Structure formats: structure tokens, C-alpha cells
Length: 91
Length: 294
Image (cartoon, rainbow over all chains, first blue to last red; front, top):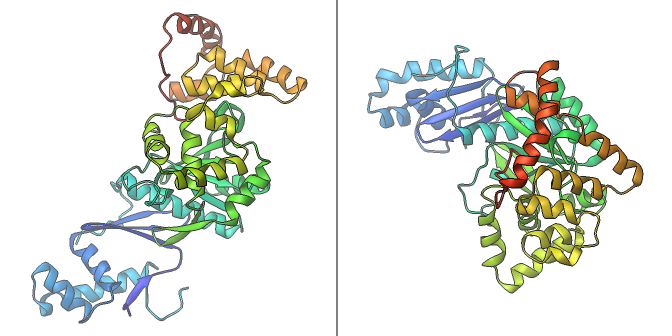
């Protein structure tokens, strides 16, 4: 089970190292690149280990170094209505 | 991190924008309980057409009695009307809208070449429809047997790049595949358009749509196309109306060509320029006209 999933009314397209997010039906389109895209991808992935650990592994940084920033970014995405914790009903 | 939430310009690849656009259109259809099928381009099942042919815009077919509602819904959500049913194509089959984010969508109320009643034709296509996921949104598409028929009928209008569809879906197809496609063609009453591309259109010489399909499939002149449109009309009244329209400037097309709303003076210039272009076409007739947007 994933930790997060796209919120209702959010469309997502992934292309290699970029994630494009759109609020439906009127936009806007938000582009996540590099580390931001990796955080989104790992947040919505069904995989072992914490999100911060998986991100750290992909960006070759220490978990302690990035964990706070990863969590802050995820909370920002939730706060903007783009992500919701999996298992919780969307707004 | 490069999260772009600043409201600035985002460079979005065409394939991404098309998928997001289809998701946006579908979300509007779902909100109004509209039956809508995504067709052509990236809505073609990979089993029918291998990945790579995404097209440049979004094509959808709407249940005919819901076209007005869909039109209202689109316009309410900042889709601007670009071309109308009357002026968009010789078949009057689709309207085009443009959205600053999602690009163009062609809203079909019927499909050129399909002569089955539009309501019945849509019902048939809807009955066995499948699904394709665009950007996480489930979008209805015609069944796999129906999709090759639609693509080949599309090729009958001589559009650039569609000859490959004919090659792969018909010329190289086996007897069973051909039989399934012809079953769909007959069910949709689309033999004339079908013969314009893979058969013998001359079998339909007495048909009122023969001249129109001969013109569009073989790259006829504007005058041939217009005469075909006149002859294709089902009644004398509609033929007379079409003749009357033939003398008018297509202001929509002119404005698009100019890149701005055409002025009265520009419309007048175009009114007199058209006959000269028609004469020029008679003497410089290409084997196949380059396809316009539609």
C-alpha cells in the first residue's frame, strides 16, 4: 500500500525525471523536476522502507540530511490539495 | 528542488499536455453525466496502432443529444470556440475548441462516412466501449474491433499520415481481421467512405455523396469539394442553402489564417480573391491536396 496518493480531481503524468500535475478541469499544470519529482514518485509508490530512505537512496544523500525537507515538501503537497494520505478519503 | 508552483510558465511536452487535456475533458463530461468517447491519436489502443502516433490535438465523440450540454460545459470552463460545425469541415461533423492550457479539442457529433443515424451509431460504439487511462483518469474509448474501422474511415478523407493506418490495418491484415472491420463498416453504414479508401468508389456513382467523397479522398479542387457538398445534401432546400453559402467567405477560416478577427475590408478582399484561387487550382491541380487541420 502506498503512503500517499493523488487527491481527487488531480491528474498526474510522469515522464522519466519529471512529474506533471494538473488540477481538473481548469488547471493549473504544475511541473515537478529532479528531487521534487522523486519525492512525489516515492510517496505514491508501493515499496519497502520509508519515503525519506528511498529518496535518499535515489539522490545519493544521507537520510538524516534530507528527511526534514522531504517531510516538509510532502506536507506542502498535502496542504495544496495535491496529495492525500492513502487510506484517507479525499476532500 | 524544482517544484514549479510560482505561477510561471511551465514547459510541458505535447504528449503530456494531450493526456492532461483528455483528463480535463473527461472530468467535465463526468461532472455533467455526458457520454463521451475518446477517439484517434493517443486514444487508439496500442493493440490497434503501436505507440508513437499521438496526434496534435484531442478528438472526442459525444452522444448527439448531449452535444449542446457539452458545448455549454466547455465554454463555461474557458474553452473558446475555434471553428463551428458549419464552417469547420465539408461534413459539418465537429466543432473545435481551444483552451490556453489543454490545447485543441475536436468535439464530434458524428463521424464522416458513417451514415447510420448518429444516435444509433453512437449507441453502437458506446455499447461495447473500453477504457484507457489518461493521467489517472479513466476515459471511455470505442471497442478494439471498432477502432480500426474509425481509423480507416478517417484515412478516407486523405489526411496526412493516415495512409500508414490503411497499410497496417487493412492491407497487411488477415482474413479474420478484415472480416471484423467490414462487419463494423456495414453496421455503421459506411461503405461509400470505405470504398473511397480501400475499395472502388466508382461503385457508388449514383450516390448523392459520391462527388464529395471523391473530392476529399483524391484531393479535389475547392470547386469540386463545394459541388460535392451541394450534391450531398438530402433535400432541395438544403442544397439551395449550401449553394447560397458557397458565395460567402468563411470568416472563421480567414480569421485563423490572419491570426486575428478579419476586418470588413479583408473579408471583401477575400471575396474577390477566392475565384482567382479557384482558377489557379484548375491549372495547378496537385495529386493530393495537403491536409488542413481537419
